[in-house]
Image 1 (cartoon, rainbow, N blue to C red):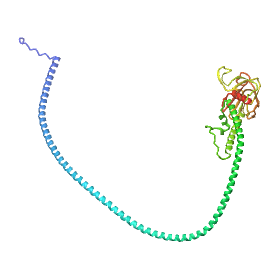
Image 2 (spheres, rainbow, N blue to C red):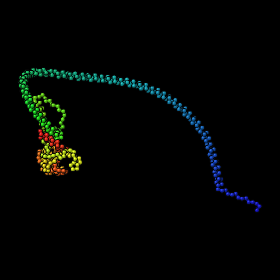
Image 3 (tube, one colour):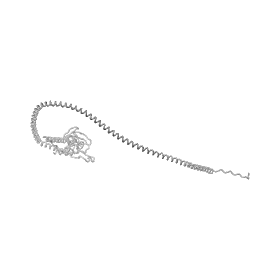
Image 4 (tube, rainbow, N blue to C red):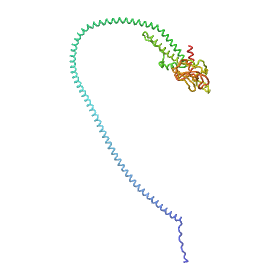
Length: 422
């Protein structure tokens, strides 16, 4: 026992060795699987290739058969087309023949209708001839009756002719008498025309003199209105609409050839100028053409000025007339008082409506002597000069309004001087 040595047991493999053993076995299995798949794929591809050739050969055979069948169909179609074309030609020829037959039939029907119409017309004409013959027979009888009546009437006319001749002689006598009376009347008319011409000649100068005087007065009054700065047409239009909306070129009227027409035209012209002159005179009587104070000086004119209190430029719509305190203030034209009392910065105020769209205003008064609604005459004493309202001293603020707009009073006073000078 002691001389024999005991064999040592094999040591157990380590973990890396065991891992390497496992990996080697897996590798071998993978190699085997790869080779198995490779050879399987080669076998499948070979079989598929052989079968594919067989399929292609079968398809080629089918395609050849289809080509043969297609050629046969083309041949049959060509034959059918030829047959159809032949049938179409036959049909066209039959159609042409049918049209010709229809045309002949239509022509025959037309001829038949024409013949029928002629027959009908001939029959109607025959009947009409029979009717006309009967009518002519009746007319002939009527004419014979009328001829007998005319014969009887001729005898009656002969009897009436004798009475007509006597009446005609009486009418001729009356005509001669009327002719003589007409000549006498013509002589009287000629004499009257002569007298009328003499009167017309005598009155012409008088009418013309009156017309010239009216025109002269009109020119003077229009000049006075123009001096005030107003337009004559606008002033007249307020109270006299008859003189509104007129104009155009002047073309002298030619009188008719009848006697007295020239005198009538001259009188009409004179009447128009007199009416126009009266209308202007009525307007002038309403216009304030005098100063409201007997003695005064102009302390501030109409228009743009420096304000007497704040010294800034301002619009001044009246005429400031300086005078002593309690100097009498007079109405510059007849009218009706529309305001009499206090009015803001104007202080005590009197306003008068003169008509024709014209109003006057008297401001900064010390005392008012009239009442609202009172009628005042020209140069009526209406107030006393004062210093009321926005004022720097005793004076009269005087305004003139036309159709609601202020006008320069200095022009009206100047026009009044022209009137009184005339």
